[in-house]
Length: 241
Image 1 (cartoon, helix red, strand yellow):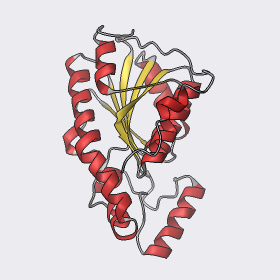
Image 2 (tube, helix red, strand yellow; image 1 turned 90 degrees about the vertical axis):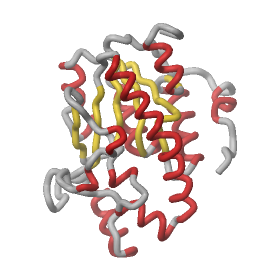
Image 3 (cartoon, helix red, strand yellow; image 1 turned 60 degrees about the vertical axis):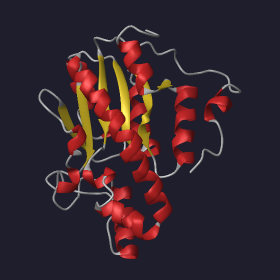
Image 4 (cartoon, helix red, strand yellow; image 1 turned 120 degrees about the vertical axis):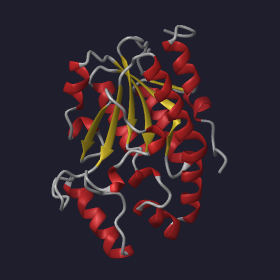
């Protein structure tokens, strides 16, 4: 699907309110959002749901994941590990087997989806295969994996304390979905004072307009949008600090 409009050109027509984010290479972590089977594999429960009921969305989303997002994240993971920088993974997964700890309104909506279509969408348990990170970018020591039960990790995990304990001041964020858990977590990170960038080619949504709109809103108010190449250049001292 082609882009319907150029969000970067639109950004130039707006007043600038976002901070000028300068990342400290020694205190910047890679934050990978919900790149688990349940959210990012075409044959997951949510993948089958999209294939059966929204086939165009399925084709677009998983094509972008396969050919753009996963390779980009794999490259970032390799670069961050080689440089000794921190990597934090998030999953959306309940701690309670019956999902009682999920945010109630979302839990109710998932129930409606299950009754309407006969399948759940993305809600799963931490011990389920659906909660496991994709093997192409799987965590390794000393990476941190945190589970959340809301779209923003700052509302339902200990991420803020974990990051501050590790001395992290900057976040480079990628994952899925751009307009949902990625956006909510990135907005909250910026509001808490983290120097936050979204890595555009490391994110995906089920629709390009949702993805682009998130990039526009984030760039307008919260931080910067960069590509993986630009990010690595900056962290290695080859570009903007």
